[in-house]
Image (tube, rainbow, N blue to C red):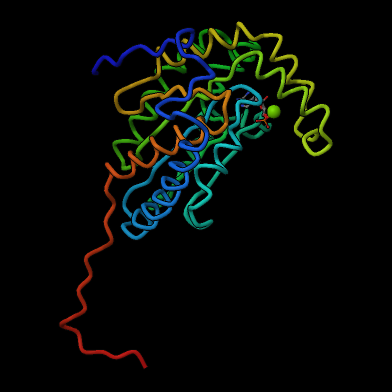
Length: 261
Ligand code: AMP
Ligand code: MG
C-alpha cells in the first residue's frame, strides 16, 4: 500500500476555503461542477458497469445534508441514491455492522451518497463505548477490506470528512434551537456528543490515520463556510468522475433495416 500524506486534523483550519478566493468564486465554480456531475452521471448510468460511492462523515451540524443538496442538486433523481445511517434498528444490531451498509451501496450506473456510514462503528460506537474495544479495534481493518472489495468489483469510493470548528457548531446548534424551521433537527443527544468533543476529535483522527487507503482515500473538507465546503466536495467528485471517464455505449444501428412506425 502506498503511504499517503498524513491528514492532521489539528493542522487543518475549519474556516479554510481551499482554492477559492471568496464566496462568489466558489459559487460560480460549484454551479459549473454540479452541472458537470449531472452530465457525467448520465454517462455512468448509460455505461452501466460501474458505480460511485460518496461517504459523508462529520459531527452534528457539519453540513452533511447541505452538501448533498449543493453538490448533487443537478443529478436527476433517478441517478443518485442517498442513504442516511442513524442508530441501528434491532434487526441491524442482530447482524455485523457492515450488513446494512453493504445492502445500501450503489448499484452499477448509480451514484450512492452515505449520510453517516460504516464509520460510525469507529466514531460514536467507540466514543460512547457501545461495543467492546476489541471489536472496534478490528473494525478498522474490516472496513479497509470491505472498501477494497467494493473498489475491486467496480465501485469507486470517495470519503469526505466535514471538518467544523467547536465555535461554529455552537452557533449552528443555537440557531437550531431558536429557529422554528430548524428546531426539528435539534436533538438533545447532540449536546451530549458535543460534551465528548475531544473524544470525537481523537476518534476522527484515528479513523483518518487507519482508513485512508490508496483505494479509498479520505478528504478533509473545511466546513465552517458552507460555500467553500460544497465547492471543495463538488470539485473532487467531478474530477473523480472525469477520471472514471464513463462512456455512452457505442451502439451502431446503421446496418439494420428498421423504421420507427
Ligand atoms: P442524524 O444523522 O442527526 O439524524 O443522527 C443519527 C444518529 O445516529 C447520530 O447520533 C449517530 O451518532 C447515530 N448513529 C449512527 N450510526 C450509529 C451506530 N452504528 N451506532 C450508534 N449510533 C449510531
Ligand atoms: Mg443530528
